[in-house]
Image 1: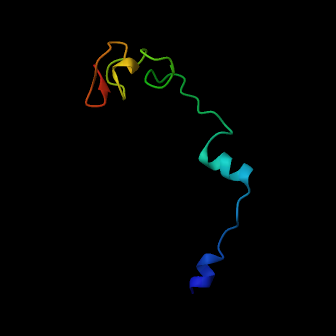
Image 2 (image 1 turned 180 degrees about the vertical axis):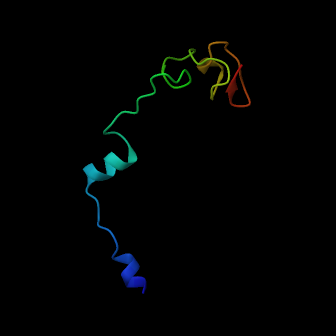
Image 3 (image 1 turned 135 degrees about the vertical axis):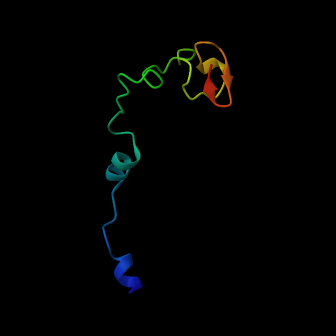
Length: 66
C-alpha cells in the first residue's frame, strides 16, 4: 500500500517547481491598498507591517499600521 501512495504523481522539473512556488507569474495586487505599493512608508492604517518604516503614519503596532 505504501508503494502505491509513493508512486502517485510525478517529479517536477525546476521550471515547474518555480511556477508552483512562485517566481514565474507576478501576483497582481491592483486595488489592494495594503499590497499595491512596495515602497516603504506607503501602507495605510490596518495593513500588516513589520516595522514603522512600512506605514504611512510611521506607526507599526502589533504587526499593523496605525
